[in-house]
Length: 98
Image 1 (tube, rainbow, N blue to C red):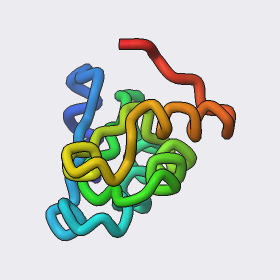
Image 2 (cartoon, rainbow, N blue to C red):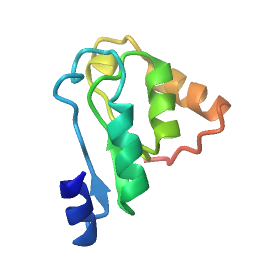
Image 3 (tube, rainbow, N blue to C red):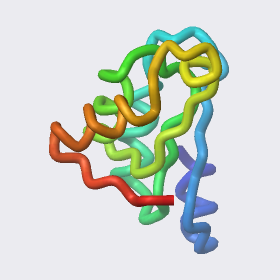
C-alpha cells in the first residue's frame, strides 16, 4: 500500500496490482488489495490475476477496480467476452467501448 500511495502521489493514472498467488488460479481477484488501493489512491485500479468466472469480474468492480483484465478464461473460451459484457451491464456496470 505504501508503494501504491507513493506512485499515486507522483500522478500515475493507473495502478495494476497482480496477485502472484491468484494469477492463473481462476479463484478470483485479490479483492482486499483492490479495495484498499481504490480507497487510498486517485489512480484507476486494474483487476488482474485470478478471474475464473463472471462473478469475479463483478466482485472486482464492486471492490473498486475500474479496469478488468484476464487471459486464460478468454483464451480457453471459459468466458465469452460478449457474454461477460452483457452480464456486467445487467448488473449496472457501465462499460467503455474500446
